[in-house]
Amino acid sequence: MAPAIPTDALVGPHPSYIEVAKPYMLQSAIDKCLSDLQMKESREDAMRLQGVTWIDNVRRSLQLPVRTFNTAVVYYHKFRLLHGEAEYNWADASAAALFTACKIEDTLKKSREILCANWNLKIAPGEHLSPDDARFENHSKLIIGLERLMLESAGFDFRNRYPQKLVVKLGREVGFRKEAEGATAWNAGLDLYRTWAPLKQSTTTMAVACVELAARLHDMDVVEQLVDRGRVGYGKLNTSRGQVMETLLDLLDLYTHHRPSTTVGPLYPLETFINIRITLNQEASAAHIPRYALYASDKPRNGVEPPSPLTPATPGTISPGTAAPTSAIGIRGQNGTVRFMLDAARARGEKVAVDRYHKAEEEEYEVEVPVTVEVEAGGGAGGGDRRRVR
Image (cartoon, rainbow, N blue to C red; front, side, top):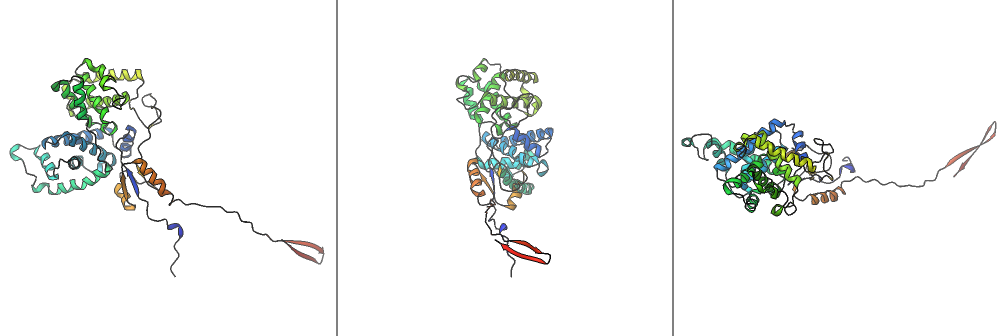
């Protein structure tokens, strides 16, 4: 006879894991991801700047539009937040991000073409190779393999932001000259993607920050008109001074510490960026604006208390039982199906509905049972009698 199967084991199929897309991330979430990966700050800056520069150079060589650059860089940033530096080469990740972005933005390029363009940038024009060269065969397969990881890291979220169009519109409204302030604002929008700002801020916030920085660099009188006034009203654009200030300081950090790796940085002396930063710091101190507009932490940052109330972080992986490592989407797939969702509320509702079938419930009952008591009645030395009482 076969052994009986314990009823506790019959809990049904695995409820699967749900990975919720994160269109926006707080600076605290970015810091936590880098801390979990044990990424040093200097190493992280180098890999981030090298990867974005690689993408920018190759996309210019292939004459790809700026929207493909934006998408590729966002995918590159999200990929690096989930995978340690020992798991990949930064150049391969850059190529895979650009290859994925070309498909998403409908500017199709083969992986061989991307690798060939990067190769031809490093050699003389007379020695250029064609994409059909045999040396790109194995490398091309590696890039195609990384494409799946790129999509998983982004949660299969194809919603992207393109601030350049709004930068041009705002520049025209405030009277920017195309070859002067307009060009500076456009290039600042490209340099902004060398920071983490595209993962944190909306399109309008990034556009307003780039336009304001361009006006400050050219010492324009319209700077006062750009601070929550007129056509650049923050309420109208669904942004705030704290978010714009955070984006501006991210850009100034980039220009202060990594000026040679940017487009706008080498065009101005270091003192210009430092003076602008001092002005913004004075404004932030007077208005009590923290360094990061939203930061999910209870600890003070540079003596400034976090804003209240804190915005709750976007839910990530929702799964019963023990959570797997953050970067192990493939490992989670071995124990159960990984499903990707865009709507966090729907994911929470589904989790509540499924948990009802996987919750161990216990009930308590009280039952009255008759008790029989034996009583001994002593008679004499020789013995006695027993009586049974119910």
